[in-house]
Length: 341
Image (cartoon, rainbow, N blue to C red; front, side, top):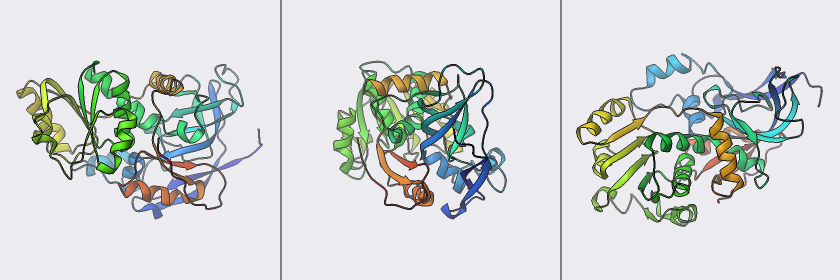
């Protein structure tokens, strides 16, 4: 282990554009008795990082967001919710991992992954990296994957059910397609027509381009509708549900969150919303799925560490497909690489 006293982190110093992000030095973290010190190789920039950095929240959440996140700037200035790397050191009582082990994990709402090093509880949301995956893919397993494990568990998704995924080409949407397929569901993906081949590779049986077709007018009924984008009217999404159907609202304004459950109950339908629960067992499940090749995250682009502002801009453009990855370490700028599953 290198005897360093400080590490580089990316800090969000105020709410605003990617220019609000700056390099900073922090003391080297030291693992507690049951903790791991992980040297990060890759992390991600996802929609949660963008929304916190820009304070770009769904309608109605502005004042509440400031109270929760920080009045003038993020209370936790180091963003980033998922990572992959190598165990550098362990606490005196830690026994699950050894120095040199490749691991990935999820800090969730605690954030802090846009850093060279971090500490994780050995019994927390951290798992061995599947040997088939590089660090860039492993880093992208948790944000979308854990969200959809949570929501499908709440929805009691069953084999044979028909699932409509709205916004299927994003991080959460592409996870929604794969995990529904893995549970034996039939999936229809709503996304731009250019992404139809990708959706089919991920397991969608049908795709709908919303610019060309109105999914509410096709006469199809779905057991579960997954809304990853929050741009379609609640009445339209409830209107395509079969009896006993479930609407999963992953992106919605405060007004819709209050109104949708009442509308759903009046029609014998269920509406589920709110933050996803963060569970260590979900990270272990994602590792097992990835090891079997049943869930592989879609990578939009990989940016070098020095181009963190460009990575944020890519996410904010809303044109990404899958996940934007940051390769940690090495400060020389380079062109981002691009790959899709």
